[in-house]
Figure (cartoon, rainbow, N blue to C red):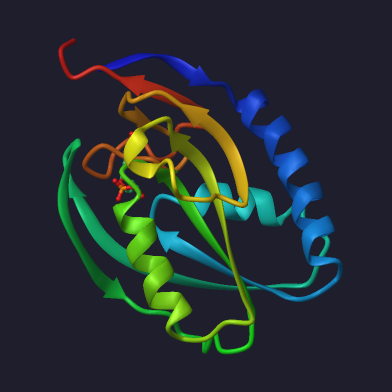
Length: 172
Ligand code: 5GP
């Protein structure tokens, strides 16, 4: 069951204000091709992009990597982009970087398509040695190892619409 709130709606909103300013500065008026990774990043991406003043176009891709609370270690592209990324300033939106396996695969895939630039925005990154070498250009929060739900993050498709992020305790 849901154990406790880790990040409140207000804390998330305040952090998004800061991230939007960082993004506007980094792209300095250039058009951003924002790519959301379905489905978890959608809440984060849309709330953040509403605060960005740079011109933005939006696309999505979907990969499958998890069943329940355990990593399957297997990444599969289930929905590809509708746009060409060549020569575009691509900003990839993730919900959480856990082991980093999913992000590594997506960065590999996207960089092979020759974008002009490729950066990453992630709401959360878990503090783990497995992902320590992964750079998230625009990071919301660093969290512990716990499994979290809410604000786009699910447990078997549930809880995505919670407006805050909570820790899921499988033993309760
Ligand atoms: P990674 O490949 O980095 O291990 O896992 C990335 C994906 O696993 C995330 O995009 C997310 O879908 C899922 N995931 C990893 N940790 C969590 C978590 O704590 N809660 C939820 N709901 N999903 C997670």
